[in-house]
Image (cartoon, rainbow, N blue to C red; front, side, top):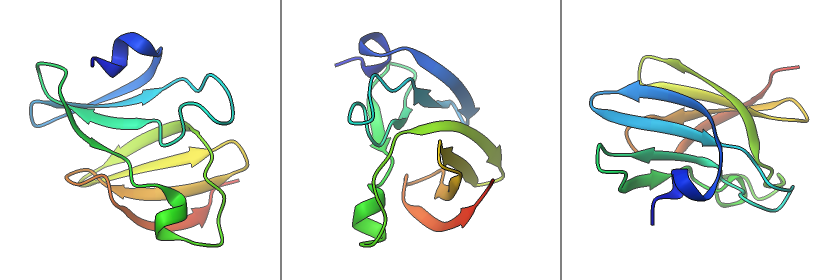
Length: 99
């Protein structure tokens, strides 16, 4: 399934022949984990790791912005919690306050 056709793409980061896309959330519940890395044929390489898998005490919320720094994507949700994400794997490296 071409995920970028089901939801509106808010931001795109191009990285080594791939695209990391941030999808517009439809609601607080969908899509959650709304960052994907896709190849040139729109096949999903990874979907960002679930916050609740990494941090048991945090709430999973859609991301609303992202930026790229080397091998790290920094993405934030609307309550101001940011997450550093490994651009190769989609795994969350750490969380921090951004607001």
